[in-house]
Image 1 (spheres, rainbow, N blue to C red):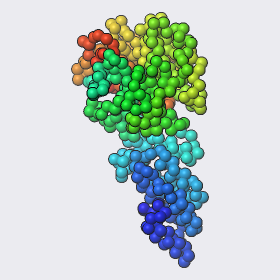
Image 2 (tube, rainbow, N blue to C red; image 1 turned 60 degrees about the horizontal axis):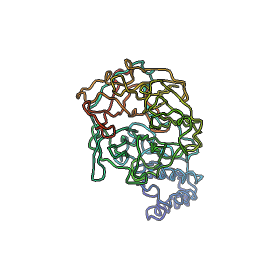
Image 3 (cartoon, helix red, strand yellow; image 1 turned 90 degrees about the horizontal axis):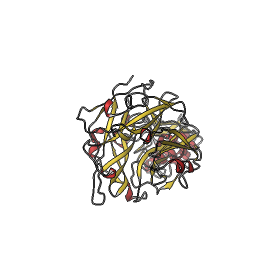
Image 4 (cartoon, rainbow, N blue to C red; image 1 turned 120 degrees about the horizontal axis):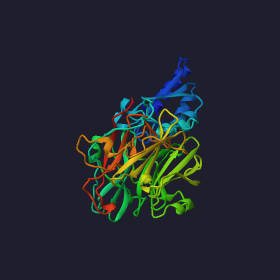
Amino acid sequence: YNIENWTDAKTQGVYNMVRDFKSRGVPIDCVGFQSHFGTGGPPASFQTTLSNFAALGVDVQITELDIAQAPATAYANTVKACMNVARCKGITVWGIRDSDSWRTGQNPLLFDNGGNKKAAYNAVLTALGGTPATTARASSAAALPSSFSWSSSGAMIAPKPDSTHNIAGIKDPSVVYYNGKYHVFASVASSSGYSLVYLSFSDWSQAGSATHHYLDRGAIGSGYRAAPQIFYFAPQNLWYLVYQTGNASYSTNADISNPNGWSAPRNFYASMPDIIKQNIGGGYWVDMWVICDSATCYLFSSDDNGHLYRSQTSLSQFPNGFTNTVIAAQDSNKYALFEASNVYKVQGSNQYLLIVEAIGSDGRRYFRSWTSGSIAGSWTPLAATESNPLARATNVSFPAGAWTKDISHGEMIRAGYDQTLTIPSCRLQYLYQGLNPNASGDYNSLPWRLGLLTQTNSAC
């Protein structure tokens, strides 16, 4: 242990010892390097160390690898150092999940506490010459039911105004579980407009006390930014934040936990596609949503006028090349297919789930749902009516008190965090925005809060 840096006295001492053994015919076949690295990863001389030991006529191995906070680049560099030395015969990672590690608080492994593949996993796989694939937590597979029932938390997450952010509501959450934490991105709204906020926490009990980081302080900038969606695009080892700016925009970040790491907004389209211009009427172009399969990425959006649109590009071209914009679904009643669409891959099946927010006959918001064998549809109704909704106040119990009659824009808790947007097939949870039933007035000034639905009629 502690012989990875070539210039260290201990490294030189062990090197001289092995050289002495070899010169005297002492049987020695291999030298192992424990390789418990800090956040900076291996020393710059690590490959030199491996190479010099191997030149003595022994194999070398990395025997207990872990790296504090598991930076993807640090893991990739470690693997490359071994692969560049012909006699480096193996790499053993010192544990599977972060929760199994002897360095638990440093999250140093390739899988998080829930067994999800981390960015470092994909970096290692790529360094080995592989291609990252779907990232998902293990879950029992079961067919989605034809009707749903849920239990809701109370209002868990409320705005946290400061001297430069006068906020009425927190809305439109997107969430992933990664590296032992829930990472939530949301809109914050007031009469003066919209911007984005980020918070993270290890357990839902901590959601209300989590620090709010306003993303307009970084390169994302000020101005209209709303309705975020977060996912990790494995082919590029980058996090993508998709949001609306009047166009469909995105920013990227190598580290989801760094709110200052997001790039400036870029647009998926040069301008609004013609088919949307022709059908939007008096509506608004809102709620962009990206999902990919093994070959193609799709971008969905809504118009508050009864239309759901879909564009596509190849996985290799993403985020560029979105064309072939079509109407993926429509309803003559614009309120029945209003906005806030989500599309997910159902884990352990060849099924996709589409959910869309509707406004009911009572003026309250709820979700309808459809399924399909492909992202491109066509879509078969699942729980898709006011009397049999996916989620509506009428099929939700409120043990802590009925704080909302609206079940509005949010996101499922995914089984993974990559671009396939995979969700479990049972024990579903949905982070949503709700509203005091007595609130009224300007929509942007309404006091939206975030709560969590948990499915109560799961088949497994």
